[in-house]
Length: 198
Image (cartoon, rainbow, N blue to C red; front, top):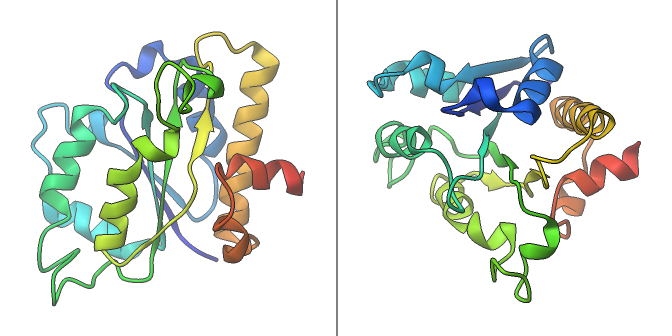
């Protein structure tokens, strides 16, 4: 069984229906650790050794956050700047994360159609996530397709429940090594694999 670390960052968690629902669906899962960064570091003073130990103790890392300005909330960037140190995460001797898997889980108010060359955002979600992809590559990690929640502000209760069930199912499949890595290479969103396995 793989150990999964969810690095959760939402500066306005009390206002988020979808992220509350996703976190509720995963809080009791065996082998899953939820690291709520804004709850843990409201002052942004990150305990780097503690965060690095969490990383080394887990096999799969999920950056889970709302899609703020086509990226992540500020604490995620601060965490990456401080925790993914040269000599630890990358560089000639920085091999602590080598072979681990990483991915993003994001929620966005926009539809999938607006995230395209023809849409008003001009780029796909995966194109906006290239910095996360390349950061994982630099750390010698395998970056998986993201889990994406579109139209987060207008989702009805049944849709929220489906996303929560899919997120939990995805984590179970990853934890129990039931996803073929080869399939991931040709998948835009990991959500698609969950639907195929439903």
